[in-house]
Length: 405
Image (cartoon, rainbow, N blue to C red; front, side, top):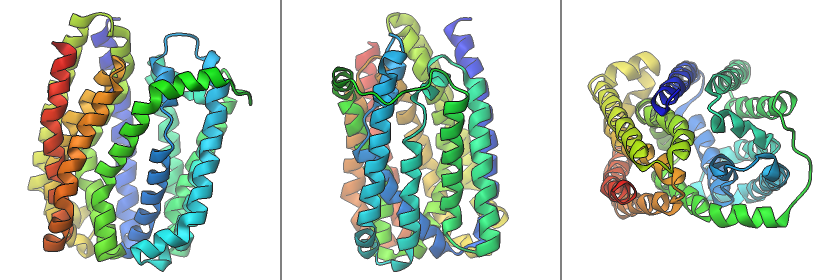
């Protein structure tokens, strides 16, 4: 089967997975929005901001390296697992100790318990068998489908069940912990080879040398994705942050999900084509055109029907999210173009291009976020995110031109 057939088959499986899991996620949000208050969603949002920050700052790029590397996966497996476990423990320790300072920064003491519970999520994830990247590396997307579907379903069932019983924000975190435990267990029981606890310094240095740009890119992606949340949460409190984050999930996620599907599938395909320049160029241009058309359709749909979507999905208490959803729908379109270009850069080992294009977006966001939030609150945060996404697009396309022409 040629690259187009492999891509199409992968898109079918991962696309089906995204549709299914996002349907589960929307049902989960719709139910929890009626069981929990916006402020409680804000507590969880603060916790996830902190988790994402420490994960981004300790990112090693090992998974990207394992997919890029054409040599035997087992050569790096033991070292990758040791580093993953150590990183998970480090993130847990930082989060647990920093929790009081984080809640003080956001002026939300009610988030302390949620934040300390969330620290266990990266700790559990650290024990996942690195061999799980074989699903993506070897284009085994049907296996990825069933695994992710099981994880999302378990997460939703646990979160909704505990919210019904307790009405507490911690329910969402317990769902994530349950999903992480399941994934770690599954990865060791059913995926081969299994890693052992051993560390090879030379292999670690090689991974780290190539992964430094992935680390920088992860940090910049964090700032680009979360700076608006940080400023909004700090300036207006947990209530506004909760409304904004739910609006973000409802609006931009269906749009960026399209780009994420193509990204997951095309990265290993582009790696296989990296030495055939013409085929690589044709594959990328087809993918980019498809992503842009699909994300634009979703964006227009969300913009036009924002009122109806909020009333049906979330209820009357969340109508403040409508203008934010309309802005973030087009943020998703611009962001989709950038996301769709990233696997091309990774495939040709130009990770720095991802870092530079993300940095451009951060600058656009950083220059506008504070005045926008002060003037327009949640809507201003959405407008600032849109500005950042639009700034990143031309920079990203310049690097695409450098790679392909």
